[in-house]
Structure formats: C-alpha cells, structure tokens
Image (tube, rainbow, N blue to C red):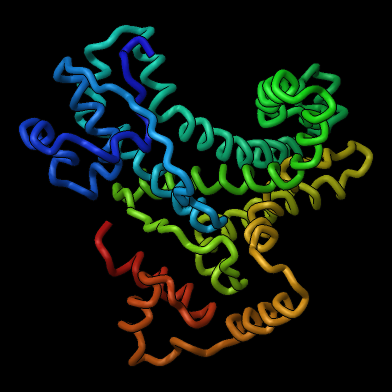
Length: 350
C-alpha cells in the first residue's frame, strides 16, 4: 500500500524486544482492549514514522487451523479484535493524519473484510423483515413489479458468486479452463456452506465485541484434523452465535410465508438464499465433522437427545456450578446451557 506496510492479522510473530519495550510495548499492557497485538505494533510503527520490513518465511510441515472448529475460533478471535481496532485511540490518531487514498488503503488492509461480512449478515435480516412489512402493507411481487421495484424478483446473483470470478480466472491461467471448471464446480457446494457459516461467525463475533466492549481470546491450538465433534459439542459451541439467529431468521421467514399464503393471488418470493443461509448455519458443523459414519451419527443422536432431556443443573444448590460450567463451555444439559447464559447476563456487569 501507499503507507508502506500491510496491517492485517498474522504479522509479526517475531519482534525486536528492545525496540518494542522502548516504544510502549506490544499491546500497551492491555490484552483485553488490544487483543490483536501485531496490528497495534504496526500502528505504533506508522505513528512514529518508522518502517517495518515484511519478510515471508516458509516452514515445512507447519500445522495451521486444520479442523473446522479451530478455523471458526480463529475467525472469531480476529473479528472480535477488529472491534477493538475500530474504537482504539491509535486508529483515531492514524485516521487524522493520512489522506483520502491512504485512508482507503488503510481501511481495506485492516477491518474492511470483517465490516463487509457484518453488513452482509445484517442485510439478510433486513431483507426478510422488509418483505414482512411489504405483506402487511398489502404489497406483493405483482404490486412491486407494477411500481418498477427490483424487489419484485428473487435476488439470486449475490456478491459471493461475483467474487468467484477472479479465482476462476486465476485457475484458468494456471491450469487451463477444463481443470478450473472442474475444481470450481466440485467445491462449490461445500465452499458455499463453509463461507456462509464463517460469514455468520465473523458477524456474531463483531456484534458481541461491539455490545460487550470485550475482545475475547480464543485458544485455537493445533488439534488433530480427524478429531470428531459430537452434536452436543457443536450445539454448545455455536448455539449463541449461529443456532439462535438461525431459528430467529427461520421464524421470520415462516411469518412471511404465512402472510403470503393468506393472499395467494399476489405471489410469493421463495427467498432461496435466505433459506440456504439459516440451513447452513445449523447443519454446516455437522457436515464438516470428521468420521460421518452411521454408527457415530446414531451415537451423537442419542447423546444429543439425552442432552436435551437431561435434568442436570435443576437443583438450587448447583447455581454457582452452572455459571462456571457455562463459562467453560462444559454444560451438561440444554436447561443448564440456557440457565448459565441468563444468569451471566443478569448477574455480571457489562
């Protein structure tokens, strides 16, 4: 960029300790506020008019986030950290001292990816709620078409399909047209479900960081890629960020469908992308869980059934233990999961 540096997550894993200690340290002694310490190190370099050379080093067989849950935790961590970047004093000072072109470069190399994912997520809810209001106002697709509105037809071509074009062009240049088409079509379904899920993951983490003011650290680690995740573990991990929003969006879609059915002659939009979205939020972790054998699926189903109907955490003497289990993500029943969340929301300061 014109600023002479790339400010995104993953930069220096190695830093000159003497240089950092003489310039305020890595994270200004605040791991809660400044979670993404490497980004704030880049801020420090820029504000002091110094330079930071970027050196790529390849290490053979270095393990990265190989499992689905580890990748999701990584996205959650850097998305929550982007909120602390937005509201930081360093960000404010930099934006005051750079011009328009450098501001655009600065935005697209820092928080643009996470902000765009948040806006896409919010637009899904807005789209469905808008059509519910249209129905309550007596406007169906026919009336909207007569008014010349683009809302009269289904929106199929989304930005996700548009962003696929550069990848196809690159693969055509490197491997040829036949190989490019085969690779894209072969991975289109799985990639669609994966990135729709991660879009929601990023948006939920940004919402949580904006509401609580806390950028949580997630330990991603390097877990084995063949580690099976049970349905219970999946629900405990994603119920707040994905499953609850999925049921809310599905309920809104159901309201729109019922309103449209009452006036059948005015037509109804199928809302394919909306339906795919809330289905993907629910089933994607199960699809990407290793070892999808029938015996394991039946075992997960029995365990999840016991989790739903279990009576753990119902005793009055277990209240403190329920809260601790909720914080650690080791709840034993669906009742305990919901109770721990409500107790934390009402008893802990924001």
